[in-house]
Length: 363
Image 1: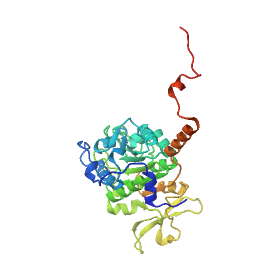
Image 2: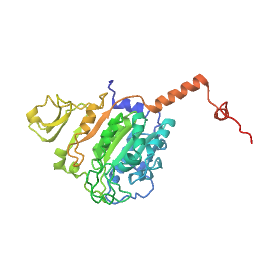
Image 3: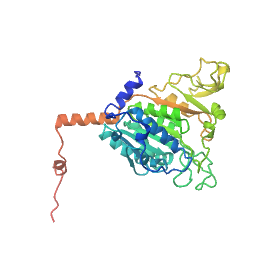
Image 4: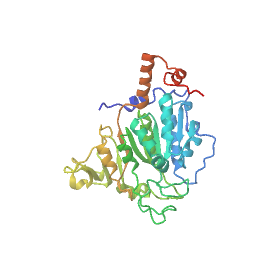
């Protein structure tokens, strides 16, 4: 696959969106609305990161749109000083698809949650991903239903005791990253609300991508599911629990080994082709997998996503798992429309409705 620079990819992804006339700051993207999330909610950190990151794009605020569904995270558009829409439960990807397809001069962002996107909105999500529409999806995952007061969600661990599952959830949780990779998403990443630097760099990579970009953000609900991601945030525990992946780098993690790098690593089992975790000191460095986010096939990225334990989140990969180029839906759709107009002229809706395929029923 042809390698491209971040600058050239951003130029392609945002080439039709008008640029801001003057330098912008974080303040320019703060609306006048009172932020109404619970004190201590992880949504505040994500909002601050997005508001602080937007000026880096240098785009006219009037050409940026945030579309949300229903849920705590879906209040997001109120707090951004851009255009936005608080839409219908689970349907944000569908509405955003219409916007991105017909208004290519817009930078379209979807804000959704694990319940909104993966329950009632599941089909809308996977079809947006497979179509590869030029939009960015931020999926806030707190592994609980927060707005409706603490029921288990599609990402809650098996056995989760909540108001709706007092004897423990019987469902197996979705892995949103695995789901997106299975839907052939061209960009898939995961980050954490409290890691501002990593969150910002991941948002930048998503913005640079031409096509649908899904970013799963682990976000703490301190009221109904506090500490759900503590193993990934506690400095000592995170050494063994978090696998940070970077394109072109060997996949290593854990406490530092003799060479100062992670003492654990990921290798491919020659017999099965599966990925597994090994001690670097025992296995050696030559066998370690080098992360290739630009690989045509999502097979390795999917295998990497399956290393995470669904119950404890131990060995969770963080970073950009996939970032590939493939045809973008809205680009191809508009090419078809231009060809149709060139070959057949502009259509007449009135003539179509009253054409030869209509008839009159006598009274």
